[in-house]
Amino acid sequence: MPDMKKYQLEMFRGLPILVIGDLMLDKFIQGKVERMSPESGVPVLTWDIELLTPGGAANVAVNIKQLKGTPLLHGIVGNDFSGKQLIQELNEAYQIDTDRILNSPWRITTEKCRFFDKKKPLMRYDRETIIALDGEEWEHFQKLLFKKRKFAPKPIAAILQDYNKGIFHQDSIPTFMELLNKQNILLAVDPKINDFFSYKDVYLFKPNLKEVSHALKKEVKPQIKDLNEAAKYIFDQIHYKNLLITLGEKGIYFNDGRQSGIIPALKIDMVDVSGAGDTVIAAALMALLSDFSLEDAAYIANAAGGIACTKPFVQPVNLDELQYYLDSLELLK
Image 1 (cartoon, one colour):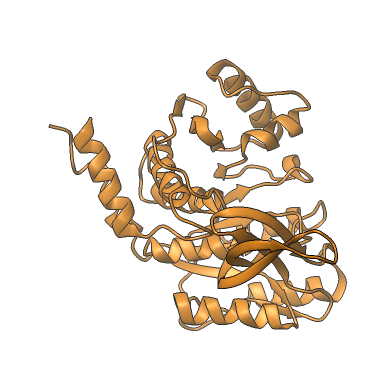
Image 2 (tube, one colour):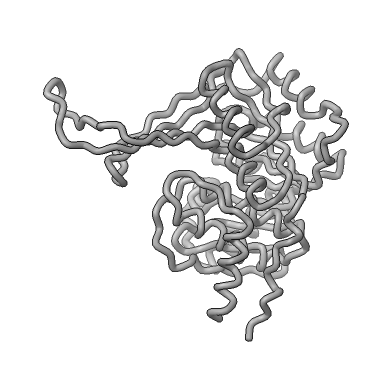
């Protein structure tokens, strides 16, 4: 019989994790197309359902909350209706404190809206301001981040969740890292292409395969030889402690300098991959903070990301369903 106690996740409860990054409001509009517009010959979508959900770094925080951790979310929204909707969703649907979120007059809230004909994707529109965090806005952001709060727990780790919307850039990244390192806060990074090698000495680095290939300026295949070579190159640039590379349908690659390998993707009925990467970094960091090895953390995160892909739209994974799924996987071994 397998060891059913191996992947017990009770240590996830209460883990205080700071999440800094680009906040988004994800909208999903589902309906049906039964005719074409006579004016332009485009499909006419008859609206049935509209779903609003936190996206980007906000989705990371939601996943931490659903995995029974304590997310401390820090980001920026615009002074607009979408920003109010996002704050309301975080407060009312997930009971996540939003007093660290800056309401900025210099930008609009990033909003992604996806349209579906029943389950078939039709199109997506993005509404956003992509400007570097700088000047007065940067000053307000730093003050809000390190404002003393009587009853807030001190974070033991921080996730820097970059979507290339302006919070992280060559000037801000070193400052973030210096300020957080001074407080002995472990750093986990989900990078994007623009500033891939700007992060240094991080506890957990989690790019995807496409980002790795772009950063190395060559195709990196989802094979252990290619991935080990890529891992060494990345280590020489940023000196990570733990590396995870998500490989899509091939699973997750892990490397801690002593051991490396690939955790195969789960055999699942995939519904929607949106937001799965947010789930992966939340689960992986929480597992590492709970004293799991990197290989076990990759296994747990792989399961969490797989569960996220079985859900329509952007939906978090909760602790009970992840624990049940891990127990089921162990029974099948």
